[in-house]
Amino acid sequence: MKGLRGLAWLLVFQSLGEVLSRFFSLPLPGPVLGLVLLLVGLRLEAVREPVGECANFLLAHLSLLFIPVGVGVMTHLALLAQYGGRMLLVIALSTWIGLGVSAAVMWWPRPAPASKNKD
View: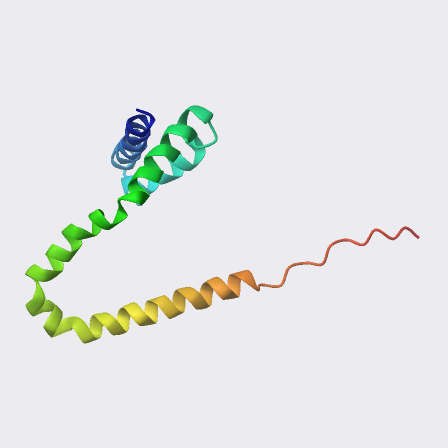
């Protein structure tokens, strides 16, 4: 039952994001705004517990969510044969760029902590 409440919370936040995005003509998509709202909402226990149950259920059945993607790829094998090499190159490059940026941010020099010596 908690899992269904969690799914309801996820749908509420996504719907709120869609409404805000369309009403204010924001450049961000509704699901992104919904995720930001969900991040804020997860501070509340009434939201956190059911969403956690729903997330555990979805993660346990994650492999089922890849079936539609696999079917989509199978229906477009000609496009994959035509553009597959370029797509693979773009995916590899974007992955390496993302890893590089993440590593640079993690190793970015931070200011040294203030010394506690009193003169």
